[in-house]
Length: 135
Image (cartoon, rainbow, N blue to C red; front, side):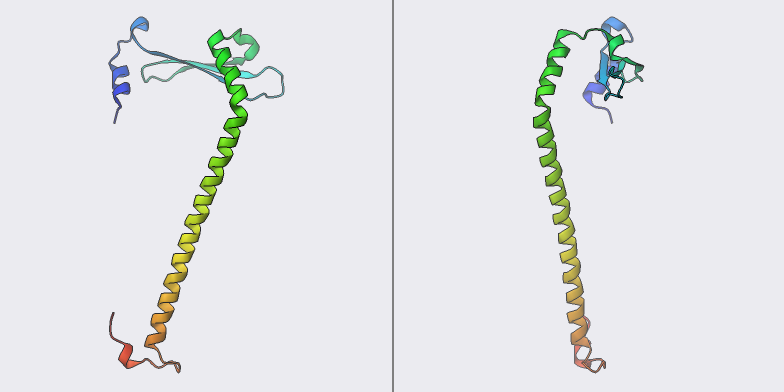
């Protein structure tokens, strides 16, 4: 099922000036060379992107707006790390709670089954005929 946005992109003409063009730049982690690898891509419509892998030094200067955003991201990384840690802790606590709930339900079912079995069988192992009524 397509969203309105995807549908609109598909209806755009295959004319560079009249269709949406997506441009992506990914700065990959430092591989120890001191010159990060950069993956750049361009795409139109929902077609596969054209990609190129190069070094940051080959890319040249980034536009000021992108530099500004990268500076803002760099200063916000500690906050983002803390938010990520809290989210991870909450998810882990939710998993533990769910796990405890399943264990508790399993124990309760076992206890109930044992109690039912005790009412059906006498201590000597002989079925108690008065308690053999189907429930």
